[in-house]
Amino acid sequence: MTVPTPARVVRETDPEVEAALLEQIDRWLRKDVEPHVMKMEHDDIYPHDMVAQMKAFGLFGAVIDPQYGGMGLSASTYARIVTRISEVWMSLTGIFNSHLMMATLVEKYGNDEQKQRLLPRMVTGELRGGLGLTEPDAGTDLSALKLKAERQGDHYVVNGTKTWISNGIEGSAFAVLARTSASADNPRRGLSMFIMEKGPGFRHSKKLEKLGYKGIDSAELVFENYRVPAANRLSDEGHGFYLAAGGLELGRINVAARGVGIANAALKESVKYSQMRKTFGKPICEHQAIQLKLGEMATRCEAARLLVEQAARAYDRGQRCDMEAGMAKYFASESAVENALESMRIHGGYGYSTEFPVERLLRDAPLMCIGEGTNEMQRIIIARQLIERNRI
Ligand SMILES: Cc1cc2nc3c(=O)[nH]c(=O)nc-3n(C[C@H](O)[C@H](O)[C@H](O)COP(=O)(O)OP(=O)(O)OC[C@H]3O[C@@H](n4cnc5c(N)ncnc54)[C@H](O)[C@@H]3O)c2cc1C
Image (cartoon, rainbow, N blue to C red; front, side, top):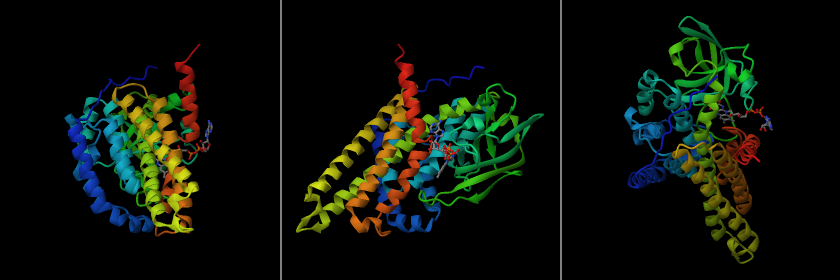
């Protein structure tokens, strides 16, 4: 079986375009997001107005090629946008990230008809996308997926459940990995990737309650004799696993960029608070124990940012970057967790209060260690690549 290698796409964003976009996003974050985060997050309110504003900025087409109406941004610019937004409210980035992962799969592996039909609607946000891999009994081990798609003429009949799907309620279409063959000698080869739009036989069920990552919807998707046209299959039957694995590189860069955002936010809050809070007659930032924490936190932020930049640059050059994206995702997400915890310690009792943003950072950060491939798997991927690139 030969899985198609997508054409090498080299991306670069004009620095002036990037600067203008980042400035616009910063202004929006200060004016329309920051004042509302605390309440919306605690009340788990879906940010409909912010979604409309992100649509207006073109974020739903951020990395989609201009020939389909998108901005065609490089992964490097995209990662910087994701970091900025995550410094204020990480949940917002989940809304357009899994949408763009689906768009990237269509752009990389779809045929011309699929690209023309789907991508312009995704750019405007008329079609809101997501990625449907995980099932109740299979997450890391995708070869154990059970969602069944049986060919019947020019359609497939789909039955089963997906879970933990971001945008599961607000989204209208998903890139779904389904089993088209039970008898394939290698279970991975029995999987195919489809674009499935909600309609008769395909609905979301319950909203899943979470520790953090509030405001945005994570849900189960249920398929009951849902008929998806064969024309919605991406690439050939049996290619799905390999498409999903390739599509995760951009997702990992995004998760890493979110980690940098949270790590930065934790540092910023700590630098501010440690100058305001006094103990034993001086601001706590003058105590060496606090300085050691701030020094470590700042170093983590910079190292994580540089790893994300490196991975994004490799992606933009069209190079294979699973090791680079894995390192960035692993280090940045662990940095987010460590910085959030240290920030809580620096804030003392107030760090545990819902009146300060630190407790949210500590609830949001661990998701980055799980999503787009757990950090256990990232280290395994890094090690495998290390051996492959250094064979003796
Ligand atoms: C808020 C949220 C949003 C999500 N959004 C999406 C989404 O949009 N789309 C989607 O498809 N999924 C989504 N997920 C699911 C997520 O991708 C999975 O939770 C993740 O891949 C891990 O799978 P699992 O939960 O089944 O854990 P498991 O695979 O059961 O793993 C359990 C533990 O075992 C470890 N482990 C497993 N296999 C190995 C191994 N071979 N070696 C060493 N350690 C191993 C894991 O690292 C982990 O620590 C989301 C999850 C959350 C919490």
